[in-house]
Amino acid sequence: MFLPIAHFDLDAFFASVEQKLNPRLRGKPVMVCGVDPQGRNVNRGVVATCSYEARKFGVKSGMPVYQARRLCPQGIFTKGHFEEYHKYSSLVFDIMYKFAPCVLRTNLDEGFLDFTGCETIYPDTKSLCENIRQEVRNKVGINISIGLANSRVVARIATKLAKPDGIVAITKSGEEKILRPLAIKFIPGIGPKTEISLNNIGIKTIGDLIKNKEEVIKKLGKHGLNLYLAATGQDNIWFEDRQSVKSIGRSTTFSKNSANINFILSVLFNLCDEVFYELFEKNLVAKCLSVNVRYPTFEDKQKSKTLDHPLEKTTDFQNQAQQLLFDIWDKTMALRLIGVKASNLIEKDHSTIFIDEKAKYDRLTKAISELRKKHGRDIITSAFTIDTSSPI
Ligand code: TTP
Ligand code: MG
Image 1 (cartoon, rainbow, N blue to C red):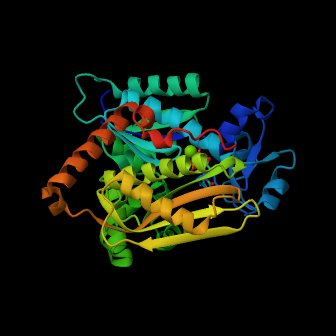
Image 2 (image 1 turned 120 degrees about the vertical axis):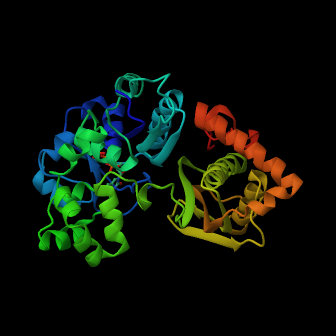
């Protein structure tokens, strides 16, 4: 069966990584706490995620830890491991890059594969995705669910139906039969408030929403139209490559506190490189750059700079970030975390491509970006960014 779009999402991602790292946690209800969705340490008393064994007790992401303890007193509560989640995420994405011509990473544990135009090489994307699942299971050791369809929105709904550890394919003709009876909360973009307000006017299923198109649009305006498009299997604004992003940032908590300037700069340059290429991919440029650090005492410092002109080269980006870092760090005190963020984002002005030097650099950036999409991020890196593993 050929369906062009696949969506994948790792099962209970942070908890699965913890179970993989620590065999004693396998098969047990595990709650991961004290991290945000990017795996960064946070002081919040909520469960970031929990294993499927814990979900049987009613524990959910975002639930206060005390409530989770009450529901599942025998559960194992563990803190998160940021570097490991990033490492496992890269392992999974490397497999995706190997199989798919176009990979869109939407989250650490989630993304889309686009096989449009690949009918000849991949006449059966469902068996291909079964192979991908197998490879992730064998090489990475965690479970993954995949949804296949003709559009991103339906593929994403299919993944929800496939969970845990499954695959679901929804063809165009199957859409009506499978989607219409589902509760409206299956539509991406419907939060609890919209769900209640639509339920209150008798709209409970996707089929109800389609039948009451005019009423939904009257009630919710443009949002209503987007929901209608999603309900009928058409990609709406949430599924276009996001242009409305407000900022793009990356940060790393070191495995050990470090004052080693070479190490710190290599991490900073690596983060800059990731942000730079993500901006490039989204056709955006930043008008503001910020760098933040965290000291072992958990004191945070941040410095931002509004830029006179967009930074068109990775090296300019890195130099600017280095200056900001040196404004907030005396090069001697140990650091615990470092981050970089590009904000005040605007669409790239293509007129600049007529300037020779810039055009040349853009072609280089594009070539590197394509290589990374195909073979993984590590296929080509700046020499400055290599030494990221030795904080001392
Ligand atoms: P999800 O993919 O939403 O959840 P999950 O992978 O834990 O479980 P599943 O996909 O099988 O339903 O999120 C990916 C990771 O992001 C998750 O493992 C932990 C983190 N996360 C949070 O820290 N807080 C949250 O509220 C959510 C939803 C996720
Ligand atoms: Mg997941």
